[in-house]
Image (cartoon, rainbow, N blue to C red; front, side, top):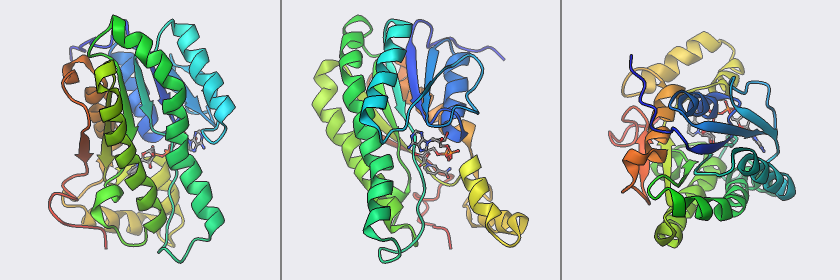
Length: 257
Ligand code: NAD
């Protein structure tokens, strides 16, 4: 298969790039010619060829140092994929304030910190490579779908969606495109960990697959391909968009039982 090297000369930072969707994005951008830095609190699964920088997105100073290091190492930063995030289960009453603060600190403020530190580098890059400079958030269909037992997680991703749209408006004239991808249930280590908590993980996986409109989970590579598209020069006219990669879960008005 011929690989289009449409990221040649472009430099990227992927948060949460050591696992799941972020690792898939990292591999795809590397294959398509980008230099890629992975920001993660656990670099163990970082794909070969990426520059690993350890940081927790709850630590503003560490995020700033990691973003600056990637930009200094590469000489520029054109593409930021802000993807690090965690799950949370329960109704609004099930999680105490401390748990709300912990999850929002990672899923929402984490993305705010990454954006804040990346913006000066993205502005500098936009002048040199118009259309090629972007920030892409990994959001979720939980932002818009009304999923049961996901109050805290959905609120966090709803904030990410609103942040994406507001940032797209604020930075469009600076040549910085801001979009998000809304995955459905994607087959990543995260889902594996959830399934492992069931009495019969294989039966639970089969039931989860049966609840999907397509009868299967979304592959991490399928979400990554959408993120790579939004970050690519082909999407030069795309900003302020939420692209669902959910096997039809939202559009078909179906939801997990
Ligand atoms: P994952 O657990 O496989 O990977 C998440 C990565 O983020 C890990 O490498 C982890 O170390 C890193 N990370 C977590 N908290 C961090 C922190 N505080 N600081 C730095 N790094 C941190 O999960 P995934 O399924 O690939 O999820 C990636 C993103 O996709 C998340 O934002 C998640 O909300 C979103 N998402 C996932 C699904 C799904 O079904 N898997 C669905 C919708 C949205």
